[in-house]
Image (cartoon, rainbow, N blue to C red; front, side, top):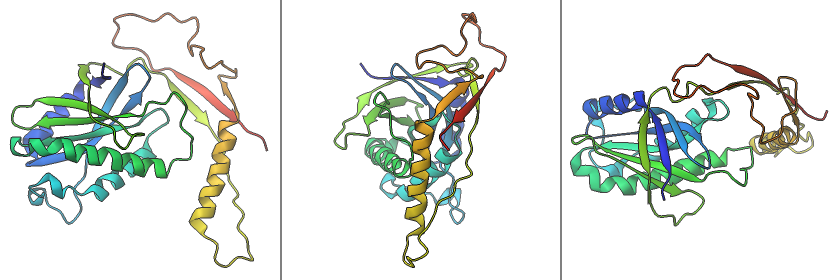
Length: 257
């Protein structure tokens, strides 16, 4: 059985508008949150054109997709996302003539984007972390939607079918955690080594800092919570309600000096 993607309803209109305005194809990213049971897509973001590229000068073949530009965009978007949200996949909206080339183009982009994001990642993936990423293909003429997934940890992974379901007020009941972290980091460099690699040393220092965060103690509203504890203990959930007041929890990260 394939994965199920629950998608914010407004994304459907956004993708429909793109299919009408941009030809012969347009690419972009899917943003959301994944869990072992299901995934949630709350934003779709088209790949911006390069400054020197006009809309009408988009190459007419998917083989000409600018892989490097799309992965750069994915890296920039990923760095701006708050904790809990990730780049879940890639979409392509193409004319019927290009539809047969879309699966291969999507597969290449999925693995290129993931490689780029993993390269800059400071945190180690959890054992239960989901490694499936979405490849969404839409025909600009028929509006047909085909969603597949690839296991990005397996370079030989083949496409698996996935369900793409729209839902209103998808994130209305989510909690926001407001976290305070001290990032006043000192990274020493050897003064006696004129050939030191600044980027490498900086990344090593950040890796040590991220390990401190992982080994730290987390206080949520002043309390230590078990991993499987509900954040809102004692609060009743309203079934069928699409609206809820925004709720914030204060998180402090305590690390060794």
